[in-house]
Length: 310
Image 1 (tube, rainbow, N blue to C red):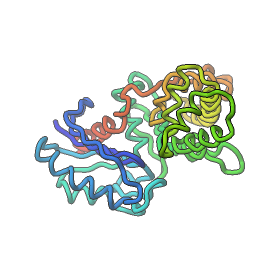
Image 2 (image 1 turned 30 degrees about the vertical axis):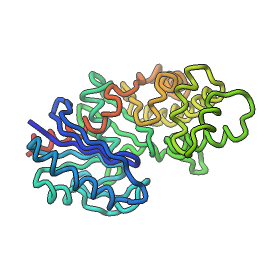
Image 3 (image 1 turned 120 degrees about the vertical axis):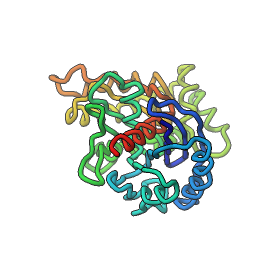
Image 4 (image 1 turned 60 degrees about the horizontal axis):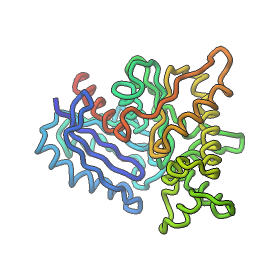
């Protein structure tokens, strides 16, 4: 059974052809032009989909979208990163374009499904996913199925408050937020620092968080400080999810997870400090087993479920 999976994020667009086991046969990855908005992304999709359909003859389409979604209809509530998606009927538009069954979910939900069924969360139940990309999202899988709140609500981890002033996880722990934090600290940092040198020499601003991993590899003090702060924020926010859902596993994905083991271990170490005694030692914390394919593989699983449900 051949399926199509689509990932629509704040910085990247992926379209894949694959199967229900998560195997990807062909991939098209495109950069999102933020200023072109939702219209530009839809133009990109419309240009690529006919080629994939002609080559692979899929039977259904699954979509992970970066924002709140009415999963029953495929209507987009909004995007917190890209303009031009408010109240857009994405499911209907794709059904008209492809003449195939289409299922649309929040991208964090789709990634959670991919990791729970085929990735690092396989064998654990429940599985809680957090995505740290251009935004921060969350998803919960229990019994092999996605948890849904009242429409359009999901496990919106990124919008948890870290304090009473209204500071959210997304404002502190998204890739863009960490970029801003790095830039602000580098500006006034006078001690020797590999991270500061890399940021100052990169030229065009943006994506500063990508320098954390190489700086950490040589023990850079500034990089360690930033990762410790981000990890503590994440652990504090995750403790609320642990108290509410008591997952067996937490999987940390998205672009910021490419910092790798230093970030994962820092969160795993900090989390027990904020978890109630009866839940100690708390869930296991993993990096994605599917790498950057958590959403595409989850989208294929979503498409397969659409076929099985008829």
